[in-house]
Length: 434
Image 1 (cartoon, rainbow, N blue to C red):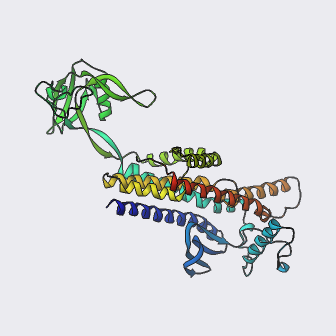
Image 2 (cartoon, helix red, strand yellow; image 1 turned 90 degrees about the vertical axis):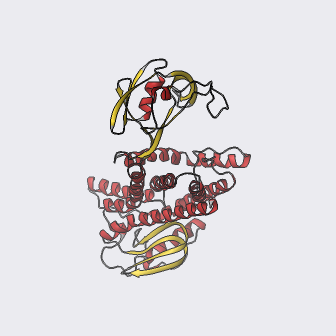
Image 3 (cartoon, helix red, strand yellow; image 1 turned 90 degrees about the horizontal axis):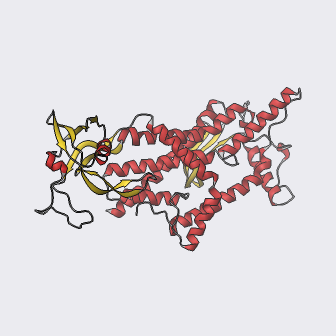
């Protein structure tokens, strides 16, 4: 059953990523069509086409490698000089040939397109809207997923309902698991607190959570406290005197520590408590800040991940993941011995985090990423604005094809980093679940 659950978790993540990629490309597709750009293809994946169907002027389909997606817009770049006569490869070496191939491929998208339906002819703001549409779609999806987790499912919270009451107080450090005749009754049992009681106030202070009640109790050893509970629809006032005991508490640095605190011997019922509607957006933007920090140090973090893999060191839990690592983590979450709702919430949070990563990563200002196209559009706008200010004719559109060698280097770098992370996720995976 565990193996089946693991496979289901991986499958759910793959489907979730496919949906995320599809929505990302829809984020590009919709504004492109709204602005009149001819879109030749809308594809999920790369490599050989598995299935496709033409609707109007656009071919929609799936390809063999589900590692991304794309839409093919007419005239992503301006036509090359002498495009009609351009038929062969350029001399001058590898990069010159690469530039010429890119020009030929771009010029092919210009053939047979009537009117001003080319991407490069759009106003700057429309080009930016098209290129930002994909990443923004991932951000919106992450907000929705976090909203489902926090406001739909809720967070597991210790409520004010008493789950159990200890009959006695066992000695600290003892391996004893049951009460004996000589063990003192717990303060909660002595006070008459029963499972199912709902705490209303402790020591005259109203409590909304079990944590509120625990804080008052821990700060009041040997002090008699009035505890108001609701039982059977009626409120009752009981008196409890917390005893001094050594218990594990959270220290000022957030780490658990042993301290002498007040103790009464009762536990809380844990339930899913829906959070305010703004909790989803807050979580998404907080995650965005964390991912920006990771992306900003990505080469260094990937190098350290490689070093840890080669030397056999434990991997940093905050190191970047490949899709293999994300799938493995999803499988482990699905296979854990936990309530199904816990596992669903964890998988949704993982998918939301991956969409935040897609959002931030695609905004990196380098071609072929969306952020690189935004930078090209902004530079084109700056040139046009400057020419207008100084009274010069409008310059020709930015010829981003010249940046193909830079794009090639970026792609190679991404492939190398992706390969390192895949190897690390196979041979030195992140251990989050023990």
